[in-house]
Length: 82
Image 1 (cartoon, rainbow, N blue to C red):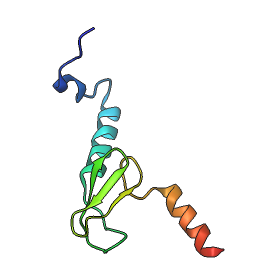
Image 2 (image 1 turned 60 degrees about the horizontal axis):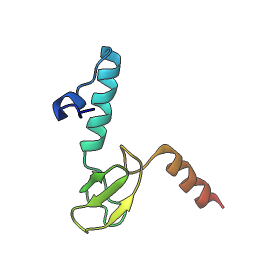
Image 3 (image 1 turned 180 degrees about the vertical axis):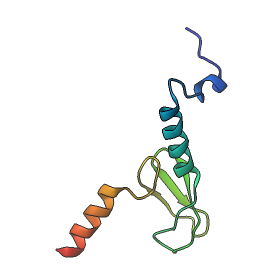
Image 4 (image 1 turned 90 degrees about the vertical axis):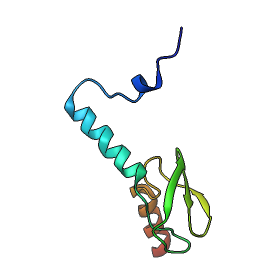
């Protein structure tokens, strides 16, 4: 079986709701975030779950589409309380 062209892989089908959701996810993954190490607004996504700061050069893992997930925030708060 041959692989479909790359342009076909990026196409979202089957309804506007799914297209809007995919667009929202792509916007989140392409945005720059604040670095937890140096505080600069320079964190970019390298690949799925891997994030890098352009200023200090730190590479760290995080969520697939955002460097800091809601579960990680909850765990951080629980760690601070204890």
